[in-house]
Image (cartoon, rainbow, N blue to C red; front, side):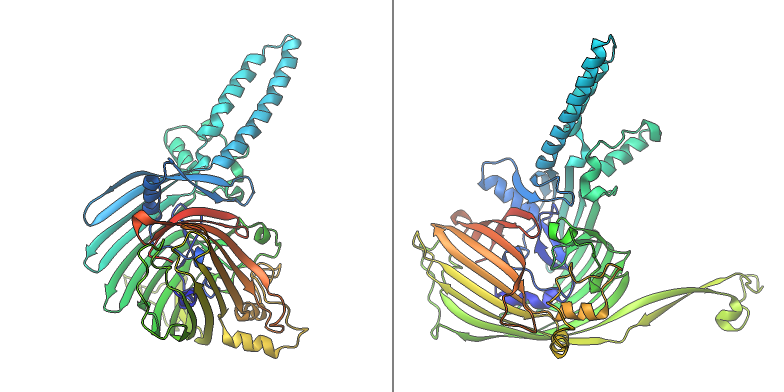
Length: 548
């Protein structure tokens, strides 16, 4: 897949990218952000199916991942499919997660505390006190507590149902922590608040100290038509990530999209409507993002609202190194999709039109509302206040976006050493009008391109000028992949911000990802990928199908 094909999806919502923060291993990108790097794009395979493949291919009971918490107390986690059922037209799975590193640190924290309690008890015993037995019971009880703590576990259920030849219904429900569920069950059991188990020390560190249920989920209905997709989706508590690695939680989101299918080249278009209810909340596992004291909402997540967007783009392959028909890949190649040496130059040019739909409510008397009495059911005039609602459409905004990419691949990937090299560079501008505005400003008025976390003002949301600077800042994505030994390859992806005023200056690194992948001969065009992002402080192992 050409790397710049994701630019039209990045202008909208529901653009998936990989993440270990969720048991589903997928979060959505904030609209109007740069496209994710190739290794972080969603694999298109449900995480539960990936875990089932990994459990069959590798002799390990769990699949490890790394997902740092906002308090820097957690890291390594292990995931596993606990149960799976299915039939010809449906399947359902239940996955579980255990926070191993957090559990280990919590264990030592409790052990240090117990040693202190034991020392105090010994002093009391020397003085003839009888408190040693109670201290020993506290030590043994706390030794079990770190393992039985529900905040150390997470659960997720995923299902997919085929409703027809071209219609699918899928859904997911996830509890990022079982602490809220355990508290609810304990409260229903019949104890009052005083009898409930108090939160253990260190437990409040989960999710940055938030005492939330940790529930998130979605329901999606997809209908495939001739050359088009119609997708309706409803989500609760879903996470999305911006270019600075900050995570945002959307309380409620509804969307419907009508889009043309992805083609190698030609015209593509998409129409959509999205409604966001509730104020987005921030949860930043990234140290660089959470360290910024001036955190602000991205312009597309500033407030609860509805908006309608439409976009069209045209993509073309400008040139190719091969003038003749491509030869079939050799049968001895480790991955037949990667056995195609080529040099290509591709480009995308598109436009985006969007409008925001807001609903305002006010309270007025009957005389203010209609300058005449409003009759009730018994014919009497209504004297009480009346709640009025109105729908307003903002002025439509239009913009252009563009992307240019060059890809070079060498080698047939059949020899055991250095027979595959891949390089890609993609220059993307999400808003040409904003880029022109930045260029028209004097150098003193426009600073380096904003990254989302450093561009915010401490008082709240970003100003219109800062939003324009951020959207108009071009980004350069670079990817380098090299065969190491046999089917094993190493890869490095980076996303960098380019200064519009000084395009020849050294770009600033926004995100980087390191990965190792191994082609799986038993599964044909499949590979096992292990990646880690130091910027977002997360990484995981996954199976990718039909991917180079």
